[in-house]
Image 1 (cartoon, rainbow, N blue to C red):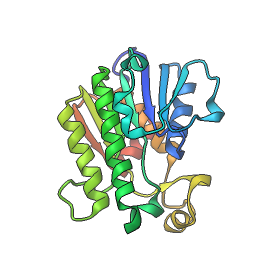
Image 2: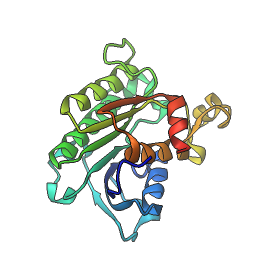
Image 3: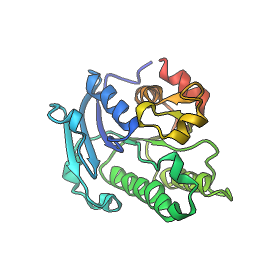
Image 4: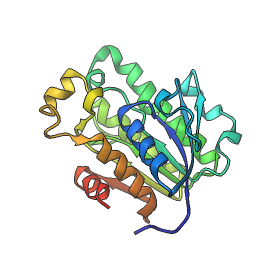
Length: 219
């Protein structure tokens, strides 16, 4: 059930990735979304020219917190869809890049969203996220969750989907691990859940596992 008739005025990063593109499609198609502001290193060409979408190019996404707050006037919901591709997460050569992306960019976006007065912050975390974990992947995602919690948004959602089916965007490794999409959560379902949660979550902070994400996608 919707919380109110209040329209979504969205901020989003990661909108050129598989889940971000699916979420952007949801936001654009819905009458419940009034406006969308997207930040990224590049534009989404397929969504260029959409009336309620404004795209801002940010060459260094680690500096997103220094973007003019005028870009986000009136925004009430933020969606963080940024993330390192699965096949790069476990490469030791990519460790610094992974932290820079999945912690650095995510937390900078969270700071910007908070400064802009956003009420709801949604973050694609990871199954097993725990800031005390000895595993880098789980620890970094947990640290982002802790950081966002400390910012004290009115509402925050951490989605821990587990394996994802990114369709045509999936690497060969991802396709094998998900048995060519048979066991992974489709990114369209994850995006639909993010959208629905924004409209219905009442708790200040809530964690969603794979099962609850699938449930939220059906609302």
